[in-house]
Length: 160
Image 1 (cartoon, one colour):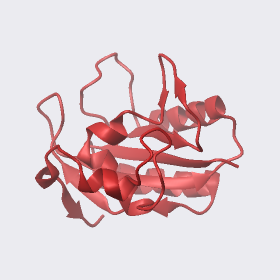
Image 2 (cartoon, rainbow, N blue to C red):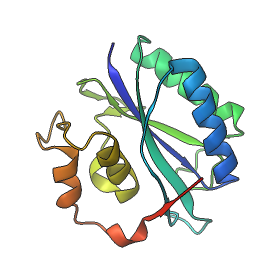
Image 3 (spheres, rainbow, N blue to C red):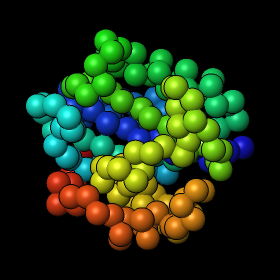
Image 4 (spheres, helix red, strand yellow):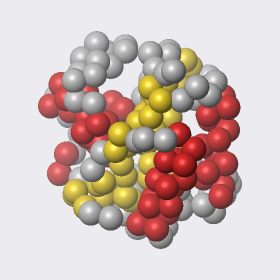
C-alpha cells in the first residue's frame, strides 16, 4: 500500500473543521502520522489566517478514488468549488505524495509542487517525515526545509 501525505488547511472555522476532518480521516484510513499545526497568513488574497498541517497514512485506494474521497470530505465540510483558486475555505485537502508516484495532469501533480513553494506545506511535511527523500529532488524533507528560501517567519505553531 502506498504511503500518502495530505496537506490540510482551513481559514473558516479552522479549528473545528480541522478537528472534524482528522476524525473523518482516522475513521476512513486508520492511524495517521500527524504534524504540528501552524498558522500562516492567507496567500494570494486578503483573508483570515489559515491553519495548516500534514497527515500521512497508508491506503489501498487507487489514486483517483482517494482523490474523489478527499474531495467528498471537503464538500461535507462546506467546501464550494467556485473556480476562485485563492479564496477562504472551510477545508482544503491536497494530496502531496502518493508513494513514489510521479504524475502531472490538469487536476493533480505528484509530488505536489506546493512542497517546494510554501512553508506551510514543507514544514509540516518535514515534521512528519524529516528523513524521507523527495522522489524527484532527491533531498530529505528536512534538508529541503533547511534550505527553504521563502519566509519561514510567517509560520506560527499553534495548538488546536
